[in-house]
Image (cartoon, rainbow over all chains, first blue to last red; front, side, top):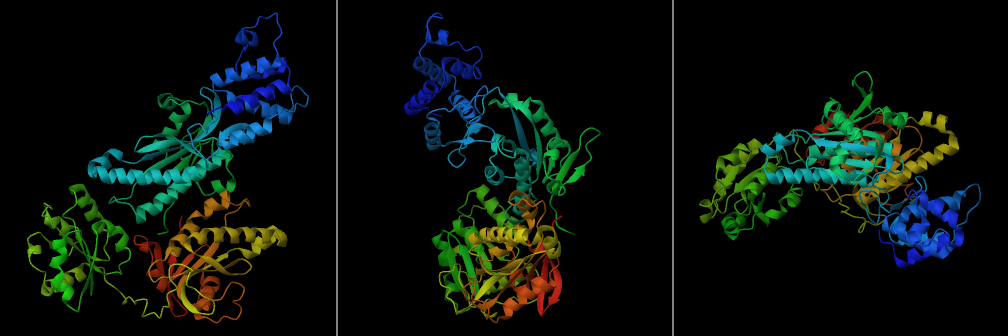
Length: 307
Length: 326
């Protein structure tokens, strides 16, 4: 995101006019450990630093480290909840939030984070998650059954068109539930959910894709036999990364791949034992238990016509 | 007899001139690129020709695969450029005729066409009952939008009856005041779903109502909308409502005539179609099921015909029930 001159000025004023030097430094140390304002400004330890100069330096440093939004999030929290047991009204906060909204960034109260407005733009990290930080995600993985065989059997055009149809179905199902495609390899992909009721949204997205495929296979599929896709939903805490190879090595992703490959029939979705307890009974009742070994209890959802 | 030819080639059009001049036949030409769009508009059991000659080999294959699925039409293949290496493949895939480059040099004659039709008829699925056209059914088509529909006039509409099941249980568990809120939300949800398809809630009683869709004699999107309503109830009950229950409802779909009056002014309407659909929805339909009358069944999207079972005759109309989704 672009931090405009106006936002920089407002944020600098917010710091300088709302708190003393120690509070400013304490706040920035939540984001940058061992932050030393004297080192950063080049002003000797023995000399006092004016609040305006300190605030300018802090905003300059957080901008350089791509931590501008996190420091504003800190300001929103102390403005609404106070700091060290005291009320702490932060000046100019309303204007800052308004300017961010104009840039397509909105405040998510539940997660206490600034995120991109999904009606304006959609990026991989919702415009909020930081590389290397841990977050709780819910994932949806999907994989086309028998990809190699299909590629041999059909023309490249038929395959490309069919896979593009699938991608459109997936995008439509996940976009409305604020999911993000983290990887797409032609024959399948991985979708992440972070905000709101992530377990519910990832599960409903998967069910929605099962429904769309069900109709697609009967109405629009170009292939002689139905397009088969296996889906799995699993959740857990992991460090956010942009690196897809690193992502594949995480335990959560290994497990979701395992659930999808070993415990899921084509055109159905299997949800893991970390997702199931987070869902309402009325939803889980639509699933059937899967025989998944002693320690795990998975549930599967599929659609079929009455015989 | 109407013959539809998809071609971009002038010699092909010329070859059909003799047939065009015969009063028994009419020929309509469309660009090959319009095939998927126009084929949907053709009545069942039509004869159509598609010129694959100018298409690249992969596109020829793709189009043949598409045509193979059109088993309710008679399909002939034209090769205006002589580029199809295996003409037998067209027949293996269910075509009833193949017109090669050589044959196009002379006008096609009616005798040959009669032979094609005779053979093509044999390839079509058997018809149990003669399909009646819109005109034979006394339809007064209302069009594809509400633009031309005026209060006080009679039109043919697609009717959707929808009503929530388990009414006694709902009354007991929600109480009168909360139940009103639940029903209002359900009403609004249904209205939002049918609005993009030009559907308007026309009458609403305690637990459900009657929705009208303009009908142009061809398009019946309401069937797919009904199927989706049934299919998605397990999702929308959780995602769009917060009542800890899965909504169960009955749907009945019918095409019929009625005088149109604006919502709220319908108290004195007398219509066989309205009576029929209310009887079907309220007296005949079982909870959680979707039903079509025979007129509506003719418009089920190709590929979903087998999703409906013959459910017998009710009030003189053949009724079809959608298979339950499990």
